[in-house]
Length: 205
Image (cartoon, rainbow, N blue to C red; front, side, top):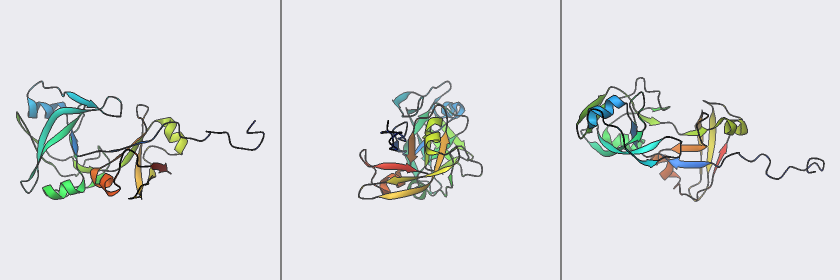
């Protein structure tokens, strides 16, 4: 009926899934080898909080990161499950405080990045590389990507409202069948816009 009248169908064109925007505080992803070096042979990570993406969790275990200035960040949370590479994700303010000169790069693309020392209750683990500031990004299911007209590796904008309104450009698009629609930004970015649970946010191509 609406089509015959030349009017838009109510609700048509709306996004298939609700957008969630979360601040990703500093954390690390570790291999099983690193976990065992830090917590003892055979140790398994213990989930204490399940994250928005399926199968991902914040672990009970934390480590201490030692910076070039001999300053440390203690209680650095490990996110599980274990991965095939070791990576620490910091905001720039974290890195400056520790003395790291970290690059902005896509998660997992750690070639040529600085390394550092991790301390756990049962030992030390030296990372030759993997300390980064992760690019802000949006996780998408393929149906979300089709709705927004983007592909994996593409870029979008995130318009954030509220009293500290700002538009973030260069939002990296990550697409996978297992993903739910979610933006990740770091604490520097979240604080810049005073991101709250009721802050209006909109993705734009």
